[in-house]
Image (cartoon, rainbow, N blue to C red; front, top):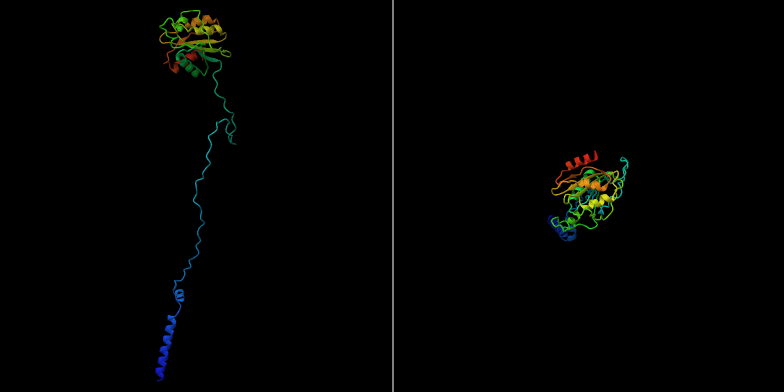
Length: 246
């Protein structure tokens, strides 16, 4: 009998224990059954550096004219500002041109010789009608047919300081235009070497240089030369050198 009682007591105790487990709070079960928190090792991240950005320079203003020389460095001694190129001292290219052909040649001579250049400008410019050589009543025809004609020059040309003058003009009816007479008679060419040159469609310089020399009455006049516009720079340089004794 005692044995039976012991068995019953054991069964009751077991039932009580199972009942106690069933009544345990859900929160406690959740706490007990929750996944353990994982404690990861402390992360030592490298310091975050911003990606290199392209430095933006302020916009530069328009470059100022180079009015001042650059500041010299210690290894580079300062240099004086270069002087603008000057023309060859004592040489003048002087010309009269009604249609522009003689001007083209005069410009080339002046550049090759690095000489000064000036133009004999008529006070009354010549028009296309004035230069109609086929009409004897036109201005140019009337002047060339009148040995006493002296067309006025717009401005006086100073010859001071020149020892040589290249004197250029076109050929009109085998002669220099009468405005050249005006110039040589109005200027003292003493001590100046005069080198005539001319342009024309076909005529040579003829006696025009001698006639101008006679009217001038002063200056050392060399033999003149006619040039076509197709003349080469080499030919011009050779003639310039011979004329100036270079």
